Length: 158
Image (cartoon, rainbow, N blue to C red; front, top):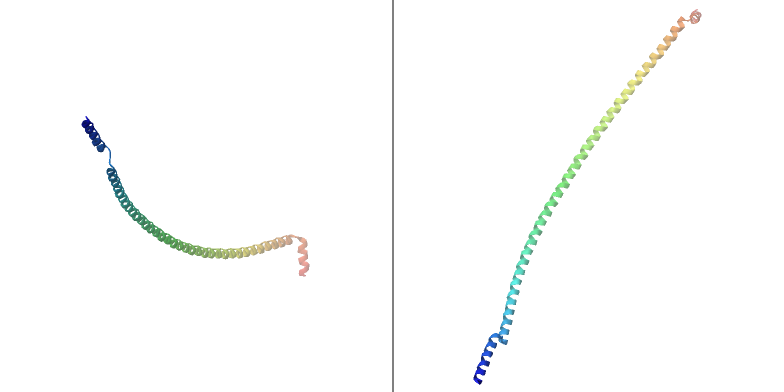
């Protein structure tokens, strides 16, 4: 019976050793965990480095694209400024031409107006002369029909 008990104890011990991890097993597992952690860390570090490289390349590409677009916009703005200056110059030239034309027309109109005034004054003077002449003739006609006037003229002639 004692043998049986010992056997039983040995069986139990065997089962316990199978089911329970020994300190060596725990150390092995810890070592494996550390190894896996190190591998994961190295993998993550590589992936992070690759991502950084990709992101930096993308940023560089975007910077270059942005700089190209900015340069293009600056060139376009410069061209627009040149075009605006040209248009201003054309507009100033046209305005100067129109002013000169307007001044010439105004001068011509003033000359025509002065000529017309002179002609009107001459006509008015002629008209005044004719009116005075007509009044004189009318007065003479009235006087000639008047017997007193006829007497007066006879006395002057004698």
